[in-house]
Length: 477
Image 1 (cartoon, rainbow, N blue to C red):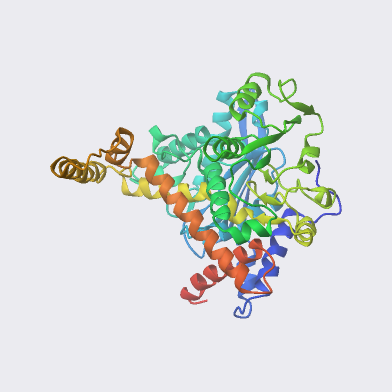
Image 2: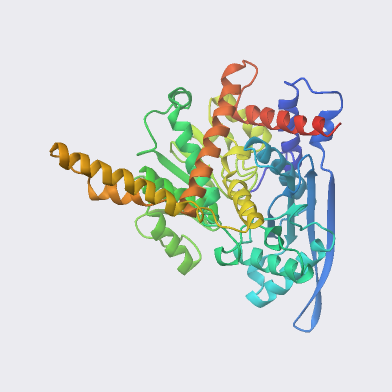
């Protein structure tokens, strides 16, 4: 569904969320404006020779806040990329990093391109040239500006960018840290591909641990059996839907994609839908489900939880009144416009905001950056020692059982699981889980402790602004 013409721009929406939170805080004069505005935006127009002719491309890299460095933020490839969008996304990155305590400022980049229009070799040429234009201005640099995948990009593009940086900076021992979201064999980290979707799962798990919050949403119990509609089955939406179904027993009743959507009140097999889409390119014709060409109409379907995981502004003044979900978790950036947010708040709909809900990606990117700078994978030093200590305990328990003739024994499943030391993937997931729990608890404390804080979003912005304020004041501003 297209964003309504009477809506505010994405940048205006983010600024209004900021202003709403800042108005409830006692900030030094002028500092709110300093935090809110984007520090700088670089626009590049470069040429690439394709099929015997020069084609010109337009790209952007916005730096919102350098209260901490390096700054961090993805690079997206899409026809709709524009300066307003990258500035808004860079601002969200500043607030997101502050909320989850990742030590970065906010940045964002984009290239105006439809990747489907080019083959792999052409995309590599274009990506490397775009990276070169940013690298030579230190807009890609391990200590200054560290991109990551976003819409239209993946670990493939990040590997090309990392290699391009290494070719230009041949003596930089930390070259791999110039970008995150790389393939594991090229300096990436286990768990990064699933990170944003896994973060959505952890965010919902933490929400459902707080029964008062669940009750406010008009829900009860756990995630098991909850009816979920997911808009967008890209990297984020797919992993969130798959994990919630397989590990938490949720029912994915609706899936919305670019060319339509499918619905089954008894639940959809996410893996089967993904395979069908990989083979056909769409959801049309998928068996055992109702198909609609107007996929956006499924945003208004009966469900418990709605997960917008693709585009900005899909929930707006044109459909907010008809949204039936009692709980919305923003897996995408900016899927709810400012006016729609007001409508939903008045209805009592609980919204888990984007600056928290999709922070799994930047959190695990932080872990990857640290791994690249330390030049050692997580778990390498301590895993086997951990296993030996566990083995000592198991051996002693077995001896005590035999000596005292208690008549019990440890189950093989427990023994195997307990003896296995944590590897990189387990440690990454543990760190992400802890981050999502801690950040949610901080938000809900502000939300419930002040009568003038009407939502988790406002609470999240207040926490982020307060932490950025401390950083700037420490710098002497």
